Length: 353
Image (cartoon, rainbow, N blue to C red; front, side, top):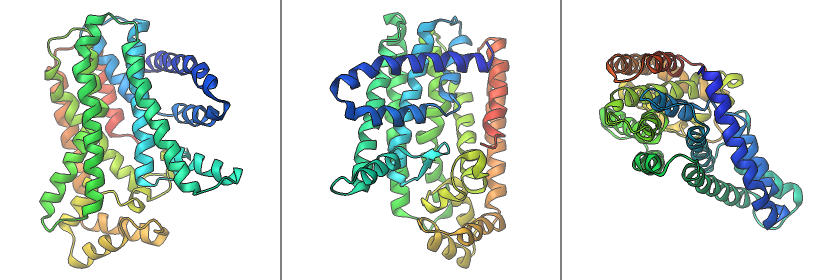
């Protein structure tokens, strides 16, 4: 099945599940409609990467195109939605996929309605609860997918580990922003890479791929890490570059938003590792300033380029992508899956959005 066909199946399964939940929320109160509206807006975007990698883990190890499988794979989009909603609250992000972030939607609702108390506090609280609903529904959709019990049991350890790892990675990300830089530049790079592994790389590619294989009953689940982990790292490093140098019209986020949020990415760590005292001081003074203006963004960009941080990050992306490609060539997968994953490898690392 072509990528577009897989996405269509995933979308149909996802939207059908959410539609089945509407009567439950409507039966509680009409006041819950803004929660569903915010979720609908978020789910309308996205690349569906996690279900796609799950699909090729499944197909590549002998699984057939079944509606029940697409139900299980689509549950990963609810996990992603919950993680994004919570991430945006923690980062204070204004937008997500070119639209207001969930907490900003609820904040605006509070302000427009003239309610009592803090609009910002209401927005954050409502978004946290919506994220919790998504995480609950993720488990419900997986378990109620219709796949045989033995298949779901095979996949459960990967499914559970993936959810734990992404939360651990999120905490490490918060910790990194709170701690700031360390004297040892190499230690900063390693710390940033650890966040990449657990917050993004494992959760985006490695675990979904392994989940698909586990659901199909494959005995080579662990071996898929040799492909999935390096590609996941390369994917996130590309995301870090786009977060600083990407076109807002394509990324759906304001220019330099990652800089305003103070993200201690591998890109930033590589720049600081190579920075002069003056350059490092500029980064420390400007990174994480929510009021960072265009001139400040351009100054930080120039430091990243002039120190060689950008070139070093691009070299890392190429190296991890090459490692993933080599592992894919040796993987015990069908030729069809290997070809599709090869195309996804390029899409994940050479993308502009």
